[in-house]
Image 1 (cartoon, rainbow over the protein chains, first blue to last red):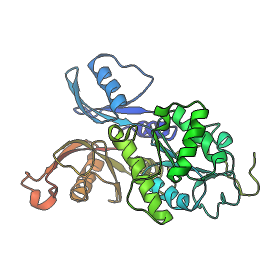
Image 2 (tube, chains in turn green, cyan):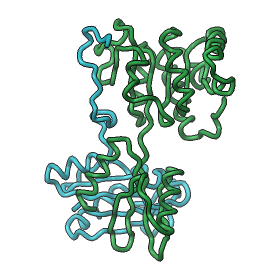
Image 3 (cartoon, rainbow over the protein chains, first blue to last red):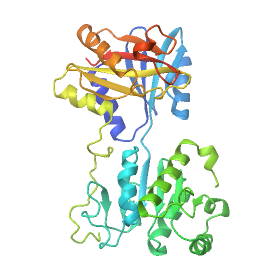
Image 4 (cartoon, each protein chain N blue to C red):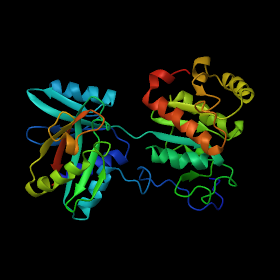
Length: 231
Length: 123
């Protein structure tokens, strides 16, 4: 592998750009194809398919064998609320491969002391997410319990089709939330995508256990979207 | 901008994943920049119940240091041994491991799967 190729590939990955590394298995030659590029022939069709499925593999095209290794951006997790659950969830989610950001405008909660080595923003979600909005590769976890803080990012996540949207709160709290979101103009179908009560039902009690339940549910939404859609 | 005095919480514009937990390809780049010889092993095909998916990487330096994995730990030793040759010769190698191999007792996959690993030198 050409050293320059490794550098270019890693730069694309750091910038959250999707890329496929195409290696000719006989000769060992390799090149990087970005999503915006078009490649001719059977190989081009195979590369296009790889971008869509996210599955790497060997293909035969134009009389040769190629290995296509697809690199899609790592999923992000945006946590609204610098609370006890988030203190456990942020490092665990980072460990499992998520780019994690914690947002809370309440400066008593959002302190670097409580969140060492975590990307923490002590600001309103509207402002904190302005430069890097939510997207389909993002999971949104809202755990402040405060509609003033949680509602805007929840609405934004549903509109941008974040792959997971979860909100902490009892059934009663959630019923009121549903009313507010309806008034904000969201459809029932959109609102039904919110995981509430949040987390897989594993009987979690402590903040750390609740963090495990949330992370497991997020991973399920990422890896088995067909099972979790509209749940 | 309601930052108060919670120190600099500005986004490191670099993006990137969790610090201190570089993935294998990032490790390979760092080693390369340090002037170390590096080989990259990639799982390119799997059959049956393989422990690591296609596209997984194990990277090895000239001293036998390694990062990442291509299996659940059953065949890494063999890949690392082969990497010495690949780093010396510069010629890529295709390796195959599975329980059906004669060498199964040595480096077989205990899960019963079979994997093909492409091993190449960087540079």
